[in-house]
Image 1 (tube, one colour):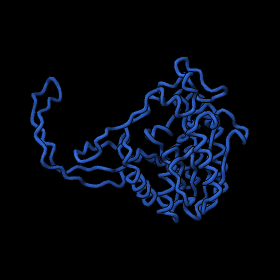
Image 2: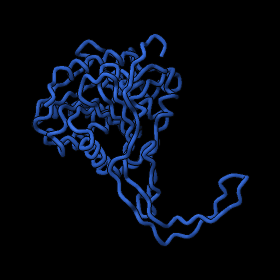
Image 3: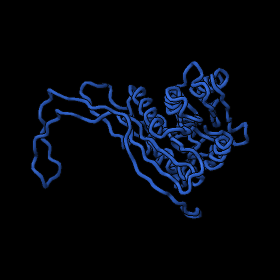
Image 4: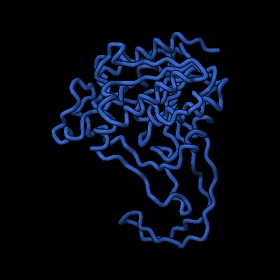
Length: 312
């Protein structure tokens, strides 16, 4: 990006984790024409499928100066959450690569490049995909009545001109795959080894569950406006930072979540700190601080907190 110094990678690539083989039988043949240049031909949907895995892209900087970071996206999104902002700035992925962290970016089960399995015996209610209006409201960019004119919450730092670009990052999801997502992140942590996990929204609850399954491998958790947190306060011995933004009093949903965050911080089995961004002098953040115009400043606060933690 213009104005940024280049940085070196020693390697990058991708792999999949978790998943299973699924057998499908008893379905009729389909006749499919793949293009106008090819005749229609019979396709047999019966057979063995590879399903329920997560896709992981990894980047290792040169030199390495810190433990690996695992990035877990939120609901209805994929690893693009971390790769750049909707208005074209560098994302938290590049920020932490520049500071020497190997980074592992997940597209969790059924999202993005992990693909999805049209299981005839699976959920019948179909996938959910957010509208632009829901992105506007659920991500606390502005009030519902402000959507048509793009009138955001006063002082909101989300680049509102890039709303459509954020809407294009939404991907289909099902409501039944959270246990599979926990299993995939657990498998990734086991493969990476001792690491730190940065998770957003639905990914927060998934990351906490994965850390509880692998407490010796997760050195710290950064939970950005999480939901789905356990009642027992999460894994003992894992250092945690809960990050929350602005405008939480504008909707019943976030008033409820704020109360749950307070209960989690107060009742956690391990040490949990709360980075309340407005209270820390960073007003204006939406549900997407990794995309707001002060995203680097928020990343710097997280980096400072991570720097204070000591890996085993």
